[in-house]
Image 1 (cartoon, rainbow, N blue to C red):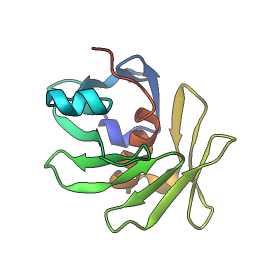
Image 2 (cartoon, rainbow, N blue to C red; image 1 turned 45 degrees about the horizontal axis):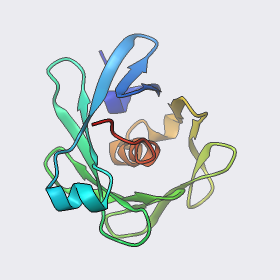
Image 3 (cartoon, rainbow, N blue to C red; image 1 turned 180 degrees about the vertical axis):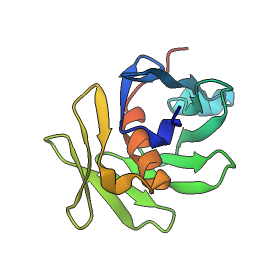
Length: 147
């Protein structure tokens, strides 16, 4: 079975990530300090199904604008998502979510499509797990964890 970031598309059902073949992952709220929970929404830990390995985390950055920091399973910084944009660890634009649901690179190439329930990845992102991670993070950063 393919891993979460290797799927051609992912559907969202509350805290479960699915494909036509079944559950491929799930989201858990990140634990945070009292103060971080008081001032910001808790972040997410994204896990693959099966043995439940951590894939990446999304946590709120302390800023006036809603920005989310994305880190891989080892805790290495991947990038920042917020609003309709994603930037990489060097703060270079990676993609933008257009009003029609298209995810387009800085050069306006299609990277995927979000229809409100399903995130479809373009074949061009097959060997780009960090881009796919940022795409999922942008969509998931809008979902509020239930406590």
